[in-house]
Image (cartoon, rainbow, N blue to C red; front, top):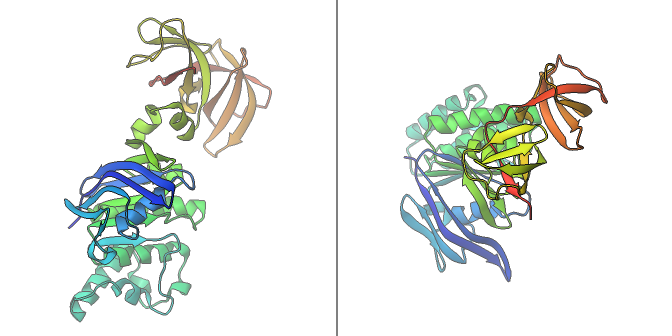
Amino acid sequence: MSGTLELRHVSQSYGARLVLNNISLQLGEGSIACLLGRSGCGKTTVLRCIAGFEQIAAGEILINGSIVSRPGNLTPPESRRIGMVFQDYALFPHLTVARNVAFGLHGAGEAARRARVNEMLEIVGLGAVAQRYPHELSGGQQQRVALARALAPRPALMLLDEPFSNLDVEMRERLSIEVRDILKSQNTTTIIVTHDQNEAFTFADHIGIMRGGSIAQWDTPYVLYHEPANREIAEFVGRGTFLPGVVLEGNRVRLEVGEMQGDTPIAAAPGAIVDVLLRPDDILHDDASPLQATVINKAFRGAQFIYTLELAGGGHVMSFVPSHHNHAIGEKIGVRLEMDHLIAFARE
């Protein structure tokens, strides 16, 4: 049975250094969440506190509604029904794949253990390599063995610590989708920590952006991308550039590339200058447009280019352009604004 997780105002310190500051979050049964942030932001410490590897300095951690951590009271890791998959997989090199998966199945009879191991290996697509050893497997196969071993005891909660970082980009993208599908099929409540935005957006139902030991924003990937809580998050999530705009009446802003109306009030009075975030998908290539921009950089991505463009007023924007439009550096092209979400920040 999958579980629920709640952190209530959790803080953690190493001596005088505050590492986690007032972390609160809730995760429903079968949900997948990601803690995303740069190295040193505290995301792995959150995982260690949830697992019971570290005592917390303040707050409470609850699994399935029961308190497992509070200051001075720590339920040991082995009593929390938590599965963990580490960055280095931590497989036992002297055990076969099947025996690695069986390792955590204590208290079950031999027939029940064998059946569960076979079930898990079929789920992760490794039934044919049950008698091989870890060194005989690829990195992706080793990762799936680690996942099967963690899932075999039917944990209430799964914790994944940078699980794909040792894999190449193509394998990382493919395996993250496979692992998500497996976790969803098992209805396993999961938290993953990563510094890779693509991984977080592919994998998670909810993402917590971590900054300096705190969660700066906790939202769905869609909301994080289109409604970042502040400029720092806007700059961190996805690609984009800022253009100055003048606030008009009716939640409108006038930019060099055109006018835009927002759905929510702009935090600035009419006439004020704001910085507007433009994503590459907001600027469309259009040969018929009177608005011209100069190509100053381009990156080929197979099906598309990512162009960096300079406007007549000196501002820079980015644009996704189909790769059959192969324009030269220095060439002028027509562009137009097609923007569904106005993200504007008042200038300090």
